[in-house]
Amino acid sequence: MDLKLGCVVMAAGNARRFGENKLAAELQGRSLIRRALEAVPTGEFDRVVVVTQYPEIMTLAEEFYFTALRNPHPDYGISHTISLGLKELLDCHGVLFLVSDQPLLRQESVADLVQFWKARPDKIAALAHSGVRGNPCLFPARFFPELLALEEDHGGNTVIRRHEEDLVLLEIPAEELTDVDTPEAMQKLKQEV
Image (cartoon, rainbow, N blue to C red):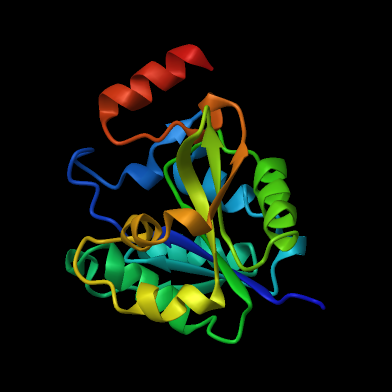
């Protein structure tokens, strides 16, 4: 069976800990959001939806031929971003949720995760290092109702915690899972790469 897959790039957050739109911050001349969009293996997905509050990210998403979706209420929390993106992809067999603050995530690793999931499409698949789950995560359609029912700042973690027995992990190098939440974390990363 040919599985129809969607991808939601979550780029709507206020990044309070960063103090400004962290997705515009650059690492080696490329912004975090550009790096996130470049990490999407477009050939694996029927549709890619970028959910954001920022007009400049909507413009960038269109450069990649992705669907840009405005989130007018980022203050509603991550659940609202998930809901907006997922509602565009309800005809898919599975949807991958990609965060935008993992600048070292490789497109090949995301493609590997898709193939890993396709071998067990009833499971939730996520990237991990040393058995510790990270992002992105790919959910089969049977979990869509639970994802749509999330509220406030509760994300996919909430659904995964209810269904640990349905989680499968694909191991990748730790640095690919590094996320940037503060200017200090960004500075540290700049020194390492």
